[in-house]
Image (cartoon, rainbow, N blue to C red):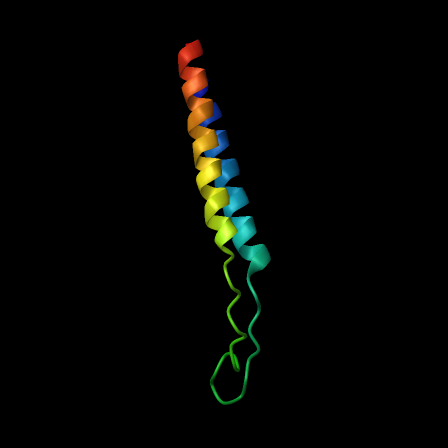
Length: 72
């Protein structure tokens, strides 16, 4: 029974990842000259706070795992 539960979690994770990819994909415009798209839009800047938030999130996850391992 636990193996089926693990497969269900893996399937749900794959569904969420692929649906997220398809949701944010931008459609191209088909041009007669053979090019799929015109000029690319300027890239979005990545804020430095994103890196700080990722580090804090990683530390939070390690803290949760450490607390759970002490209980067991």
